Image 1 (cartoon, rainbow, N blue to C red):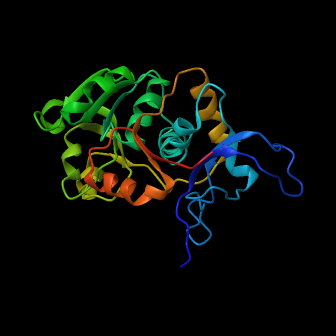
Image 2: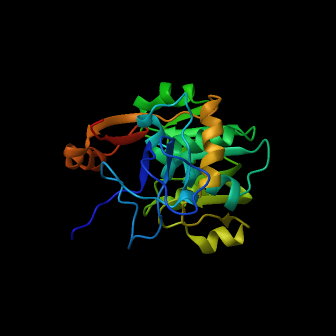
Amino acid sequence: MPWTPGSDASGVVAATGPGVTGFAEGDAVFGMIRFPDLETGGRAYAEYTTAPAAHLARKPASVDHVHAAAVPMSGLTAYQYLFDHVRLPHGRTVLVNGAAGGVGHFAVQLAKTRGAHVIAVASSRHEAFLRDLGADEYLDYTATPAEDAVRDADLVVDTVGGPGAHRFLKVVKDGGTISPVFHGDYRREEAARRGIEFRGGQVHSDGAQMEALAALLEDGTLRAGIDSVHDLADAAKAHERAERGHIQGKIVLTVAS
């Protein structure tokens, strides 16, 4: 202490440092700042912060700051998993577990840009939300476990993990891929015998990829779901909401104009 948390931000450039040519005072920008450098951090829970220019992109004019602020970490995680680590080919079957959450709902939409057949797994209250985002199939895990209903998926993006994660070995085909966003017991020796690969990695700040996400937001291909919005002064309430789980989209903090 003192320590300011937060890595995702959307705002207006107040000033630029020496040598910055890509942005100017007054530009609306967004991005994930200095992640995963937890020592310096993004310091985004604030009215003012600083950011490397290489971590930012111009905010699409069609998207407000609340929706833009919801994108960076979750959007980049989904983007980097699907397009950097997996390099998702066109037309595959992709199951997204925890599909209504931050990373999950972006993974659903980004997989669709590759012509994927997307199976979304979430609780019952999220069905309309996920079908509206383009999910081809929906599974309410409280009624039908994915391992009882799905076979031969090319890719499982698991945003939940945990001790029961190995159940997705039944879902993915031999030679397929599992992308775990969080740690879990995937029984990797069994997976190796079936030629199942695990692909993923630590999300990192990337302004060029934020520009790619911005283009998808601008043309409506990508949308950010908002679970709730809280004032910066009520940040503790935002964390309490996160701890209750079953989030639909993202939780956003706003600052006074």
